[in-house]
Image 1 (spheres, rainbow over the protein chains, first blue to last red):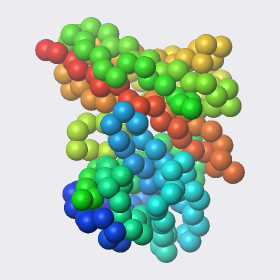
Image 2: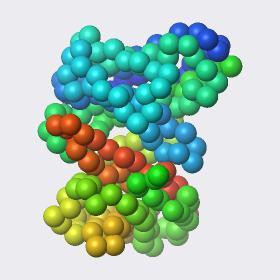
Image 3: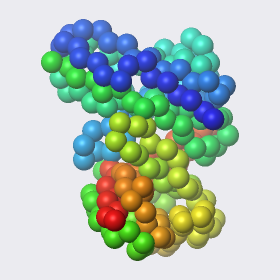
Image 4: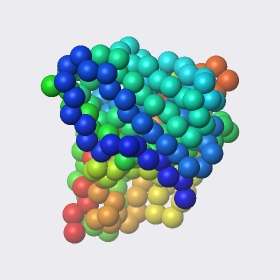
Length: 113
Length: 114
């Protein structure tokens, strides 16, 4: 069974801090994704990666960057956290095959004060 | 502009009855559709999908119907069970570069009452 593990369930950070959200998957999936979920807005794609060291912007990349140094790990970085980045962050992975279902982690609830 | 719309934020159904969750989309380039279910404090889990070349796909109690001309899909759950209470997200796939990518609706919260 696919497991996508997000290192923290809850995080509280201060405005201006640099924040790292870590995600690891154990099924050798090529694709990895970062979404954020906000009430009334659904899931919105921040960044995704189809291979090691490869990244592409999603629909809302502003204020974020990512790192994929190893196939199993995909990190989301908030360079300077702001209060509007308070959200639920969801990592997902999938096979490279087109339309393969996403497998999500349990999310990280980030609060920026 | 919202390309995938779930116009009902919530739905309440009696146990044993049918639940019908609706989803509309605007982009005719979408060629694959998926439903995800999300319980509180968990990530979404894949439920069922349908290709645009089909109009129906069934998996146990779950059936997804696609009406391409109306740009509408629906998820039917029969019979509904209390464990089905969750938020359901509709998602549509489009090709971005050489890969597919998903656009999600805002979700519908289903409550199945015993």
